[in-house]
Length: 520
Image (cartoon, rainbow, N blue to C red; front, side, top):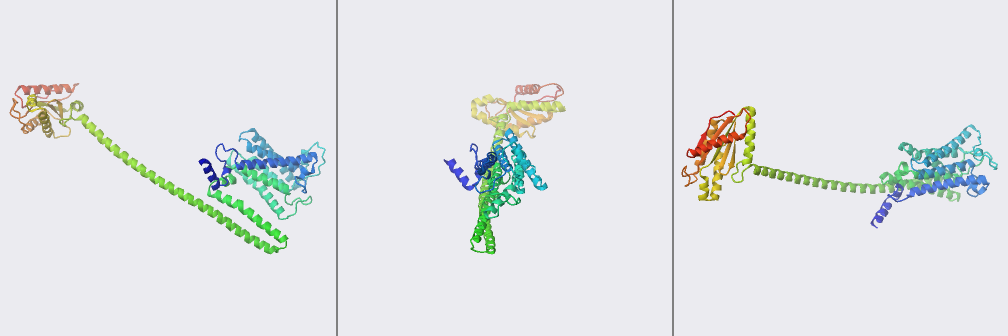
């Protein structure tokens, strides 16, 4: 039900919207039905004229009582044009029926061209006799008038270009068919205004009424057949040009025709003279055109207001989308910053000891390996200080684990205070053991750092009544350094420093023992 109301509203907004084809599965549109009806009518009436000549029935020859009989070549041309137009509407661009329609179009154009040639050179070729060759009906010479021949020639050319594959060629059909449309419309206006009908002696008179009607129907059917291009495409569109087209073209000609016809009838009735009729017709035509222009301008104004409102909605929507995009970008940037901070925190946690805050054992092993590789590549020295807290087990047993943890934290801070360079790393080697990695440092420099670390711990004056080394917490360590020249690993350096640490413990603790550098 909602969909039906939407379609009804669309039809009210655009009366010719159905000319554009409607939606999928909508069947034939109004334009299709009108075009098919016109093609069928033209073809059937042309065939009726042909049958009238074959069967010698006067009513069929003239189609309407009291009118002059149509000639056999005229009926044949109308029949061929109607059949061709029907095939063009029903066939696809590659169907064989389309080829047949083109052949019929060529036939109509050639017949009209021959008639024009007869009129130019004054020769009668007997084409109507050729059409009914072998018949028993006596035919008098039946030449087409130049206006009729021109209409058929343009109609045949329109059939040849209608629904062509190339757009430029297909549009030509609508331009070519304007000639028979204009000639037939002028003939109908002349008939309505009382212009004399054509006679046998006056071949250059306007078209006969039934011929003018058939040409008018055929021309409108051609225009309605291809509703995607040209004038019909504009009329069926929902653009401003389509609105003007529908309002002006459908109203102005009819209004002007009605005004002129009314004034002619008034003159014939003796109501006023021709001068007054001419002046009043012009004045009424100007007024009608002004009203039509104002009506079209009003439609364009409404269309423009709708377009502006739509553009305002689009701009508002774009601004809202931009704000949402900016907000998403801001949230994404914030999330990325939080993620980066979390990654840095995770990296810090993965590299640092949770209790003391210095580097952990994993980072110690990795960093020492990298520094040894650099030292081996550039033939530089690497020093390692390996130390531990003297009698820490006794401290832990008597003062408690909490006090032991606090002791390790303060010892780690003291060791870090002695590492001045960025490349120097203090790490917790395990338990109460600590290590200091000193890149590009020889034994003498490393010994000074180790001694400074021992004194920094001593200055903490953490009471340790159960230490054999003294009344306060102290550390002992070994200092090893080497210049790497051969294939070796960090284990040799750690083993050398550990051996010196053991020697410092053996000699009484609270001291740093250094060895002479040895080439690997």
